[in-house]
Amino acid sequence: QLSLPLPGIATTMGNAAPRGPAVEERLTQPRRLVRQLSDLDSDRLRRLIRSGDLAPCFDAAEEDGRAVECPICFHFYPSLNRSKCCGKGICTECFLQLMPSKASKAVHCPFCKTAAYAVEYRGARTLSEKKLQREEEQSVYEGATRIHSKNAG
Ligand SMILES: [Zn+2]
Ligand SMILES: [Zn+2]
Image (cartoon, rainbow, N blue to C red):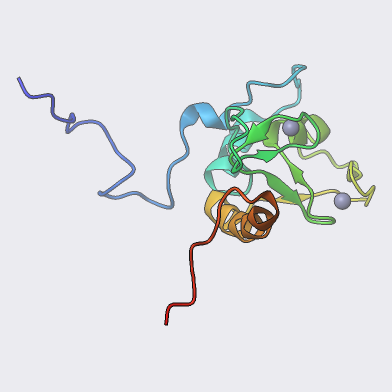
């Protein structure tokens, strides 16, 4: 028998994807939290992740030059949220530690202490595009990857 993909399984490619690429269900649930968040609104969290307003709860990645390190928990992730005030990265689960719910009280930025801390997520692609620019700069100093564009002719 041929092992063909099951036609009944919904895929993100092709038919009728309502909006954007679907985020895996497991990535909408925090797993690395060091403490239970009693007031964590998991439905709201799922919506925020699905709509692209927060980074998915990625598995911690290997440091491979592409992953970015969360300055709070020091794990590496494919991409991070960015604080609107100072542009610092933070993973979703560390962000949840700071702001588990839509609490009315103001939270200060853990990096620059600006009041009314908030983050935005530009998505993995946009972020990696930005990272590429930085990596090009860094690669000059690392000497690992050389851009093999020579003046031809
Ligand atoms: Zn973190
Ligand atoms: Zn800040």
